Length: 224
Image 1 (cartoon, rainbow, N blue to C red):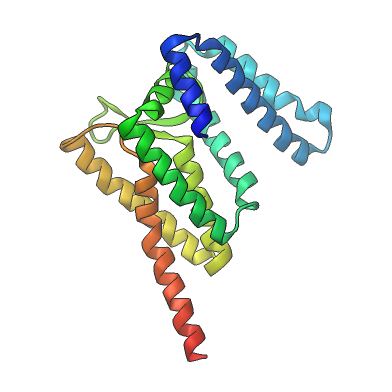
Image 2 (cartoon, rainbow, N blue to C red; image 1 turned 180 degrees about the vertical axis):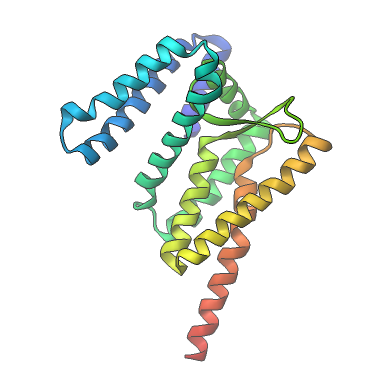
Protein backbone atom coordinates (compact mmCIF):
# COMPACT_ATOMS: atom_id res chain seq x y z
CA UNK A 1 0.00 0.00 0.00
CA UNK A 2 2.81 2.40 0.88
CA UNK A 3 4.62 1.62 -2.36
CA UNK A 4 1.52 2.08 -4.53
CA UNK A 5 0.51 5.36 -2.91
CA UNK A 6 4.06 6.69 -3.22
CA UNK A 7 4.25 5.68 -6.89
CA UNK A 8 0.94 7.39 -7.63
CA UNK A 9 1.99 10.61 -5.87
CA UNK A 10 5.44 10.73 -7.46
CA UNK A 11 4.05 9.91 -10.91
CA UNK A 12 1.55 12.72 -10.56
CA UNK A 13 4.39 15.12 -9.78
CA UNK A 14 6.90 14.07 -12.42
CA UNK A 15 5.27 11.63 -14.83
CA UNK A 16 2.10 10.72 -16.62
CA UNK A 17 -1.05 9.87 -14.69
CA UNK A 18 -2.71 7.86 -17.45
CA UNK A 19 -0.78 4.61 -16.83
CA UNK A 20 -2.12 4.83 -13.27
CA UNK A 21 -5.62 5.13 -14.67
CA UNK A 22 -5.07 1.98 -16.73
CA UNK A 23 -3.68 0.16 -13.69
CA UNK A 24 -6.73 1.04 -11.59
CA UNK A 25 -9.17 0.07 -14.35
CA UNK A 26 -7.39 -3.27 -14.72
CA UNK A 27 -7.37 -3.90 -10.95
CA UNK A 28 -11.03 -2.97 -10.51
CA UNK A 29 -12.09 -5.01 -13.53
CA UNK A 30 -10.14 -8.02 -12.27
CA UNK A 31 -11.86 -7.84 -8.89
CA UNK A 32 -15.28 -7.55 -10.53
CA UNK A 33 -14.48 -10.56 -12.70
CA UNK A 34 -13.37 -12.67 -9.71
CA UNK A 35 -16.52 -12.00 -7.71
CA UNK A 36 -18.75 -12.34 -10.76
CA UNK A 37 -17.16 -15.70 -11.51
CA UNK A 38 -17.77 -16.84 -7.93
CA UNK A 39 -21.43 -15.82 -8.24
CA UNK A 40 -22.24 -16.93 -11.81
CA UNK A 41 -19.86 -19.95 -11.94
CA UNK A 42 -19.31 -19.33 -15.67
CA UNK A 43 -16.46 -17.22 -17.00
CA UNK A 44 -18.34 -15.85 -20.02
CA UNK A 45 -21.03 -14.39 -17.73
CA UNK A 46 -18.40 -13.08 -15.33
CA UNK A 47 -16.83 -10.96 -18.08
CA UNK A 48 -19.95 -8.77 -18.41
CA UNK A 49 -19.64 -6.65 -15.19
CA UNK A 50 -16.00 -5.56 -15.80
CA UNK A 51 -16.70 -4.82 -19.47
CA UNK A 52 -19.74 -2.73 -18.54
CA UNK A 53 -17.70 -0.86 -15.92
CA UNK A 54 -14.91 0.04 -18.37
CA UNK A 55 -17.36 1.08 -21.10
CA UNK A 56 -19.36 3.26 -18.70
CA UNK A 57 -16.18 4.89 -17.40
CA UNK A 58 -14.74 5.65 -20.83
CA UNK A 59 -18.04 6.95 -22.25
CA UNK A 60 -19.50 8.82 -19.24
CA UNK A 61 -16.57 9.87 -17.03
CA UNK A 62 -16.86 13.52 -18.15
CA UNK A 63 -20.61 13.69 -17.50
CA UNK A 64 -22.71 14.46 -14.42
CA UNK A 65 -24.19 10.97 -14.52
CA UNK A 66 -20.79 9.48 -13.75
CA UNK A 67 -19.32 12.15 -11.47
CA UNK A 68 -22.41 12.45 -9.23
CA UNK A 69 -23.88 8.96 -9.25
CA UNK A 70 -22.06 6.09 -10.94
CA UNK A 71 -18.65 6.87 -9.43
CA UNK A 72 -20.16 6.58 -5.93
CA UNK A 73 -22.03 3.40 -6.83
CA UNK A 74 -18.89 1.71 -8.10
CA UNK A 75 -16.86 3.02 -5.17
CA UNK A 76 -19.32 1.47 -2.69
CA UNK A 77 -19.39 -1.80 -4.66
CA UNK A 78 -15.60 -1.89 -4.68
CA UNK A 79 -15.43 -1.27 -0.92
CA UNK A 80 -17.96 -4.03 -0.23
CA UNK A 81 -16.17 -6.57 -2.45
CA UNK A 82 -12.78 -5.82 -0.89
CA UNK A 83 -14.22 -6.06 2.63
CA UNK A 84 -15.95 -9.37 1.94
CA UNK A 85 -12.86 -10.80 0.25
CA UNK A 86 -10.36 -9.88 2.95
CA UNK A 87 -12.73 -10.09 5.90
CA UNK A 88 -12.57 -13.88 5.84
CA UNK A 89 -8.77 -13.92 5.56
CA UNK A 90 -7.94 -11.74 8.56
CA UNK A 91 -8.02 -13.02 12.13
CA UNK A 92 -8.62 -11.12 15.36
CA UNK A 93 -4.88 -10.73 16.04
CA UNK A 94 -3.85 -9.84 12.50
CA UNK A 95 -6.66 -7.26 12.36
CA UNK A 96 -5.19 -5.43 15.36
CA UNK A 97 -1.72 -5.46 13.77
CA UNK A 98 -3.06 -4.33 10.40
CA UNK A 99 -5.11 -1.50 11.94
CA UNK A 100 -2.10 -0.24 13.90
CA UNK A 101 0.19 -0.29 10.86
CA UNK A 102 -2.47 1.36 8.72
CA UNK A 103 -2.90 4.19 11.22
CA UNK A 104 0.87 4.80 11.29
CA UNK A 105 1.07 4.83 7.49
CA UNK A 106 -2.02 7.02 7.22
CA UNK A 107 -0.69 9.63 9.65
CA UNK A 108 2.72 9.78 7.95
CA UNK A 109 1.31 10.01 4.43
CA UNK A 110 -1.34 12.60 5.27
CA UNK A 111 0.55 14.92 7.61
CA UNK A 112 4.24 14.44 6.68
CA UNK A 113 4.77 13.29 3.09
CA UNK A 114 1.23 14.24 1.96
CA UNK A 115 1.43 11.41 -0.60
CA UNK A 116 -2.00 10.15 0.46
CA UNK A 117 -3.59 13.52 -0.31
CA UNK A 118 -1.83 13.79 -3.67
CA UNK A 119 -2.77 10.24 -4.67
CA UNK A 120 -6.39 10.94 -3.78
CA UNK A 121 -6.38 14.14 -5.83
CA UNK A 122 -5.03 12.24 -8.83
CA UNK A 123 -7.69 9.55 -8.55
CA UNK A 124 -10.50 12.04 -8.06
CA UNK A 125 -9.21 14.13 -10.95
CA UNK A 126 -9.45 11.08 -13.20
CA UNK A 127 -13.01 10.40 -11.94
CA UNK A 128 -11.96 6.98 -10.65
CA UNK A 129 -14.15 5.31 -7.99
CA UNK A 130 -11.56 5.58 -5.21
CA UNK A 131 -13.78 7.42 -2.71
CA UNK A 132 -17.37 8.14 -1.81
CA UNK A 133 -18.21 11.82 -2.36
CA UNK A 134 -21.25 13.22 -0.57
CA UNK A 135 -22.64 16.77 -0.27
CA UNK A 136 -22.44 18.49 3.10
CA UNK A 137 -25.63 18.97 5.08
CA UNK A 138 -27.56 21.17 5.70
CA UNK A 139 -25.37 23.36 3.47
CA UNK A 140 -25.01 21.74 0.04
CA UNK A 141 -22.14 23.98 -1.03
CA UNK A 142 -19.23 21.67 -0.20
CA UNK A 143 -18.56 17.94 -0.33
CA UNK A 144 -17.19 15.33 2.05
CA UNK A 145 -14.81 12.69 0.71
CA UNK A 146 -14.17 9.33 2.36
CA UNK A 147 -11.62 6.99 0.81
CA UNK A 148 -12.35 3.33 0.15
CA UNK A 149 -9.55 2.28 2.50
CA UNK A 150 -11.48 3.81 5.39
CA UNK A 151 -14.64 1.96 4.37
CA UNK A 152 -12.59 -1.23 4.17
CA UNK A 153 -11.07 -0.70 7.62
CA UNK A 154 -14.47 -0.03 9.19
CA UNK A 155 -15.95 -3.11 7.53
CA UNK A 156 -12.99 -5.28 8.45
CA UNK A 157 -13.11 -4.23 12.11
CA UNK A 158 -16.86 -4.81 12.27
CA UNK A 159 -16.54 -8.26 10.68
CA UNK A 160 -13.83 -9.32 13.12
CA UNK A 161 -15.87 -8.03 16.06
CA UNK A 162 -18.84 -10.02 14.76
CA UNK A 163 -16.73 -13.19 14.55
CA UNK A 164 -15.28 -12.60 18.02
CA UNK A 165 -18.24 -11.25 20.03
CA UNK A 166 -21.35 -11.64 17.89
CA UNK A 167 -23.47 -9.65 15.45
CA UNK A 168 -24.84 -7.24 18.05
CA UNK A 169 -21.34 -6.05 18.92
CA UNK A 170 -20.53 -5.47 15.26
CA UNK A 171 -23.70 -3.42 14.72
CA UNK A 172 -22.94 -1.31 17.81
CA UNK A 173 -19.40 -0.69 16.55
CA UNK A 174 -20.73 0.49 13.18
CA UNK A 175 -23.00 2.94 14.99
CA UNK A 176 -20.17 4.25 17.19
CA UNK A 177 -17.92 4.66 14.13
CA UNK A 178 -20.67 6.69 12.45
CA UNK A 179 -21.03 8.82 15.60
CA UNK A 180 -17.26 9.39 15.68
CA UNK A 181 -17.34 10.57 12.07
CA UNK A 182 -20.35 12.79 12.77
CA UNK A 183 -18.58 14.52 15.65
CA UNK A 184 -15.33 14.95 13.69
CA UNK A 185 -17.07 16.32 10.60
CA UNK A 186 -18.95 18.91 12.67
CA UNK A 187 -15.65 20.08 14.16
CA UNK A 188 -13.78 19.94 10.86
CA UNK A 189 -16.36 21.81 8.79
CA UNK A 190 -16.86 24.55 11.37
CA UNK A 191 -13.38 25.08 12.79
CA UNK A 192 -10.48 23.40 11.03
CA UNK A 193 -11.20 21.90 7.59
CA UNK A 194 -8.18 19.96 6.31
CA UNK A 195 -7.23 16.43 5.16
CA UNK A 196 -7.20 14.10 8.15
CA UNK A 197 -6.31 10.38 8.57
CA UNK A 198 -9.78 8.85 8.69
CA UNK A 199 -8.33 5.56 10.00
CA UNK A 200 -7.90 7.33 13.34
CA UNK A 201 -11.60 8.20 13.42
CA UNK A 202 -12.65 4.67 12.45
CA UNK A 203 -10.48 3.16 15.16
CA UNK A 204 -11.62 5.71 17.73
CA UNK A 205 -15.23 4.74 17.09
CA UNK A 206 -14.57 0.99 17.08
CA UNK A 207 -12.05 0.63 19.90
CA UNK A 208 -14.34 1.39 22.89
CA UNK A 209 -16.76 -1.33 21.82
CA UNK A 210 -13.97 -3.85 21.20
CA UNK A 211 -12.32 -3.16 24.56
CA UNK A 212 -15.63 -3.27 26.44
CA UNK A 213 -16.64 -6.58 24.87
CA UNK A 214 -13.21 -8.09 25.50
CA UNK A 215 -13.29 -6.98 29.13
CA UNK A 216 -16.82 -8.31 29.49
CA UNK A 217 -15.77 -11.68 28.09
CA UNK A 218 -12.79 -11.89 30.50
CA UNK A 219 -15.05 -11.14 33.46
CA UNK A 220 -17.50 -13.84 32.37
CA UNK A 221 -14.67 -16.40 32.13
CA UNK A 222 -13.41 -15.48 35.61
CA UNK A 223 -16.89 -15.86 37.08
CA UNK A 224 -17.32 -19.23 35.38
